[in-house]
Length: 104
Image (cartoon, rainbow, N blue to C red; front, side, top):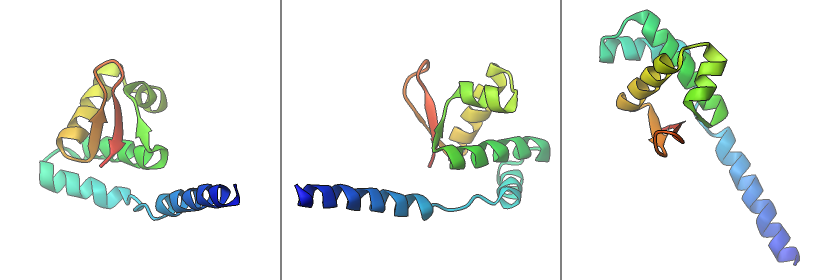
């Protein structure tokens, strides 16, 4: 029983270490990369970078979370999330109704 408890504790420690090793998102650098690479307007890049910083803190998000947090319309939130997925920054999971997004 002690061995099992130790394995669970080690798994928790490993999970914590992985979560602290995650890369910190530098919003200004990210924004400039988007403008340069994808030829989008700086204002749009700013909004997309905000979403990516938000995702980095949460782990995964849904369209509804983006709508509630940023005040975008559902259509706009879906478009931004689709763009971030197409650009390779996010990965979509699930079907249309249950779709969530996480950082790649």
